[in-house]
Length: 239
Image 1 (cartoon, rainbow, N blue to C red):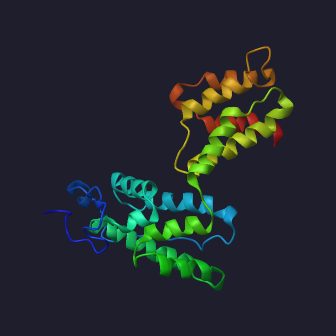
Image 2 (cartoon, rainbow, N blue to C red):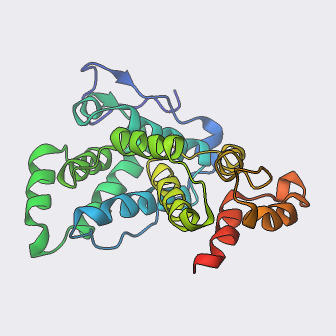
Image 3 (cartoon, rainbow, N blue to C red):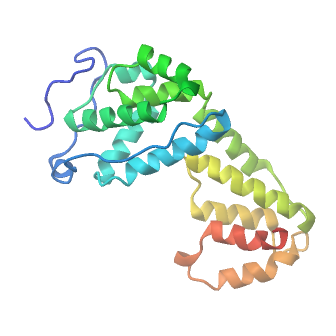
């Protein structure tokens, strides 16, 4: 039966099969999965952005979007040890093996000896998601903590004058980028609502200097209102 071939990893060892690739997804699966990764960052600060770009590369390499979304969700929802017990189907194994190969290429160099050692010793051969979990540990990446801290900053930070607004807008943009990198983006509607709530451009206690920019922005249709574009417009005076 389609998609229920034997697994090379952990067959019958605990968590059972992952959600299977559908026949429709298989019809659109490329003959060869192709993507490349740049060398791994040498510092922890560079990992969050590198990791975010890696997921974007997976989404853009001509595989069915539903398949890629499920693969990334499997990665996020499971620990490294759990991933060893999940039975992937042949299509998931193909992507996982390609990711593993590309991570090894990205870790090629004497400066990555610790990365190489841990991937080889802790991961099943060809297990890209496991290798990515190892890198998260090496770079001390904690998605839940980062996203919680970013959400807390967005929720609790205030701005009551045009003098404070430059730092506020820069901080807001930075923390929104963290949420995006953690695969937990804040919706466009919620960002716009937060901006209006904090800056209060039309109220006495608000930042009236921004009222003109807001008024011009509100003339657009709702479909054309982009939060990041508004942040950029409001930030122009601080460039």
